[in-house]
Image (tube, rainbow, N blue to C red; front, top):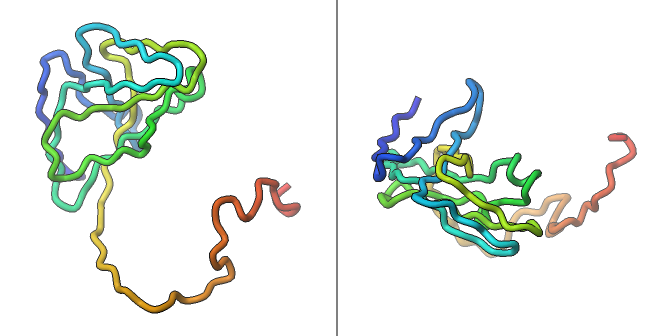
Amino acid sequence: MIKVKIVRLNQKAILPVYATAHAAGMDVSACLDAPVTVPSSASALIPTGFAIELPEGYEAQLRPRSGLALRHCISLPNSPATIDADYRGEVGVILINHGREPFTVSHGDRIAQMVVAKVDHVVFEEVESLSETARGEGGFGHTGVQAKAECL
C-alpha cells in the first residue's frame, strides 16, 4: 500500500475515499461555498478543497464517473487528467457538460474518480527506422467498428 500525504485546504473538504473494497478509483467530491451551474457545451473548474503529495515515481489520474457520463453527459475534457508528483496546489476537476441541459454541482457531490498509478520515466533512443509489425501504421479506427464473425 502506498502512502500519500494529503492536506485539507478547506475544512469543508471531503477527502477522497474508495467506495468499495475493490474499487480502482477513489471518489473525489466538490468543495463549494455555493452551487456551480455548468451550462450546456461549457466547462468549469471545480475545487476539491485538498492538496496531495505523491511519492516520487507516482501520478494521480482524475477520471470521469460513469454515472455522471451516462445520466447527465458530464465528463472531464482532459481525461485522464494527470496530477504530477511535484504538484502541491489544490486538486481541481475540470468538468464539461456535453448534455443539452445545464448541470448543477453542489458541495459534496462526487464529481470524479482518482487513481494513483506508478510512472516509469523513459529515455528515447533515436533510430533511423522502427521494426515492422502486421499492424504497421494502421490506426484511428483502421480495424472498423463491426465485430468479427467469430465474436458474434
